[in-house]
Image (tube, rainbow over all chains, first blue to last red; front, side, top):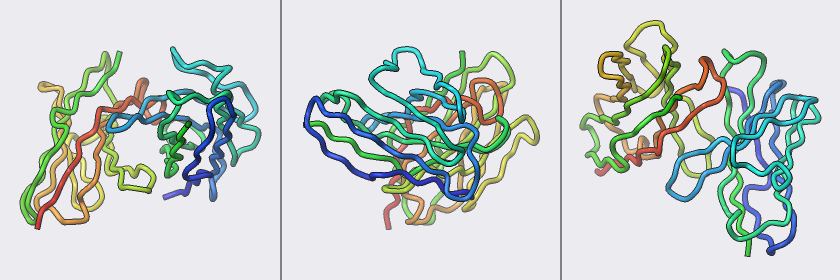
Length: 116
Length: 114
């Protein structure tokens, strides 16, 4: 299958700082990328959907000013957690899809964010 | 609205014995259903998918699932567990077909003992 990478794999930051997470599709062009959040021993919750070159669509309850998503190219999307707080500590996972909704989503390995 | 319920948070089996991971879904229309596996430090991997074709779906690594509309179930099975099958498994439904917005179940952790 296609490969999606995330960087960094782990990040620890102080409360009040901002953290950027990158999601890259390595061998295909991703017209759509998705960002998920996974709490410990819980399921994945979709945060937002982004299409290349347009604004992200956020799920209900997700603060768009806190979780900034940029999908500036067909191979890169970034999630910036602004003014991070300890409750933002979580596992963030991206996925990427080429073309239409009938094309498979490929998932990245995830980024563990710890806010002190 | 679509949702999935995974009936067991943990399943423990012995190597070589059958695996059954249970999933029930709720959907207002004919759903697309998936099973994904998550190994530590690796991305979620698609095991199999159902998209309104054959009700018995065969996936990778010997896994299969049967779509039963009358029971609103999509249970995952494997005849003989291997140690490498130990992982977290997610039953997933698509909100509007295909690989559009995916709605994940809570997950089932499968442990395989020698």
